[in-house]
Every structure is written in C-alpha cells, then in structure tokens.
Length: 256
Image 1: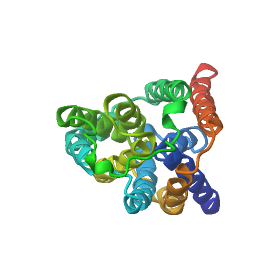
Image 2 (image 1 turned 90 degrees about the horizontal axis):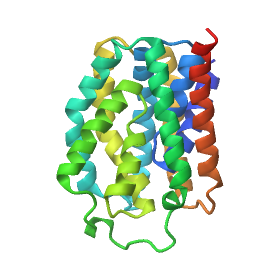
Image 3 (image 1 turned 135 degrees about the vertical axis):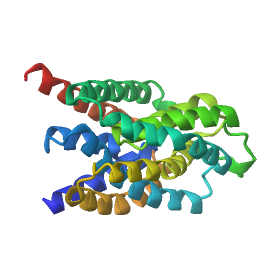
Image 4 (image 1 turned 30 degrees about the horizontal axis):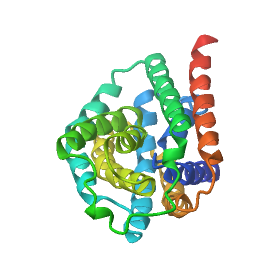
C-alpha cells in the first residue's frame, strides 16, 4: 500500500509539475474513489503532496530563473484569507456536492488545457530576464490569489487550476514562466490551508506521508521535463485523464 501511494504521488507530481498544476488534481479523485475518503480528508491529505511537489519543483524553477517573483508574492498575499475559508468550507460540503463540484472543475481545466495547449508549450525563444516583465498587475494578482487559496484548500489541488489559466490570460509571461510562477504561487498558498486542515484533523497521515515523499521526488523531474516538451500530445493526455476522473466521480453517484 505504501509503495503504491508513493508511486501515485510520484507520477501525479511529474505530470502536475510539467503543466504547472501540482499533483492534487490527480490524487484527490483517487482518494475519493478508491479509498472513499470524506471530502475534507481527501483535500487535507492531498495538500501534503501538493506542498512537497510544489516546493521541490519551485526550487528547480528558481535555479532555472523562470519564476516571476513579484507576481508570485502578490498571489501568495491574496491567498491567505482564501486558504483558511476554503479549508473551513469543505467541512460543510456533502460528499455528493463535493464530487459534482470537483468534477465540474476538472472538466473546466481539461477544456482549458485542450483549447490553450499551444500556449502552454514552452517557447523556443525565451525572455532573458523574466523579472523585467510586468507579469500580472498587483490588484489582479491579489484577487487571483484569493481564488487560488480558496480552491486549493477546498479541493486539495494546490490552486494551479486557477493560477495557470489566469497567468496565461492576464499576464505577459511566456509559457515557460507560467508553469514556474504557478508553482511558486502554490508553495506560498498551500501551507496555510494545510495547517488549517491539520487543526481540523482532516489529514490521514498514513496516506499523506508516502504521497508527500513521492511528490518530493516527482516535482523536480516534472520541472525539468517541462522545458523539453516538444509536442502537445502530453497535454491532450492530461486533459483526457482529467475528464475520465471527472466522469468517474459523477458515475459513482449516478449509479449509487
């Protein structure tokens, strides 16, 4: 069991880091479907993986100088109240409502990936100095940060599902900086939500620890591979996987 959880954490982190989403969007459906975890426990346990995945991936991105620090700091500041509110809100969500909302989120992310997959592929001509770009205006970054923090703690997915599209649409960052800055924003936003879940006793540690270890190793691998993506096929596969996970979450209630 421990080995399988480590493998799941590693694989989820590799794919999550490559597209800047973290690994929670893969792990949460597994926890809900196969371990039948309550929503709050699934979210809190998943955030352990998100933190190690984002932390290790962010370190790699910082060394590669691909992070727009100013945007990341403003996103992190806006996420503080959202992270606490999201962790508190999921305690009151029924399993059925959680699964339907999470499925809708996954379908939305899958659609965004499929439609904008060309924008997500790293640029061949990179900006020499990412910090010289404007990034995202600070009022917008604060607002996006609040949404990122809320979604992160509510679903245990890290918030990249909101942050990556926002950076693509509302900033001047190139694709290779979007995934890096998203990881930096996630590592600033996830710990507070995780601590709130810990206080609420939402974390199942025997599951969280092997997932987190897998995320620790998978994060840097995905971060390095992200700069070598030559094709959009991987992104299509990720979108298909998200759609399948969403259908599985809904199906268990339709047939139940």
